[in-house]
Length: 87
Image 1 (cartoon, rainbow, N blue to C red):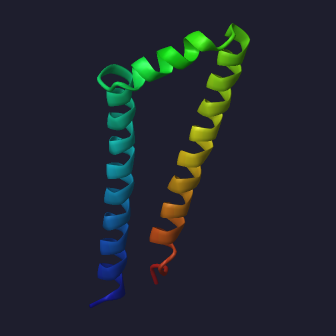
Image 2 (cartoon, one colour; image 1 turned 90 degrees about the vertical axis):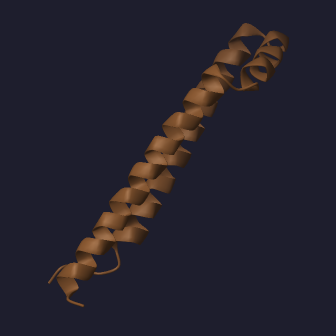
C-alpha cells in the first residue's frame, strides 16, 4: 500500500471518529435535557440548595464538562493524526 493511501484512510477514519463523537455528545446532551429523568434529579437537588450555590455549581460543572470534552477531543485528534505524515 502506498503512503498516500494509508494517510488518506487514517485521515478519513479520524474525521469519522471525531464526527461520531461530536454528534453523540450533542444527542446525549439533548436527551438528558428534554427526555431523561436527570431533569427530575437536578430539580430535587436544586430545590435543596440556596440560589447562589446553584449558580456556582452550574458554572463549575459547565466549565469542568467543557474542559473534559475539549481534552478528549484534543487527545483523540493527536492520537489519530500523529501516526505519520504525508511524504
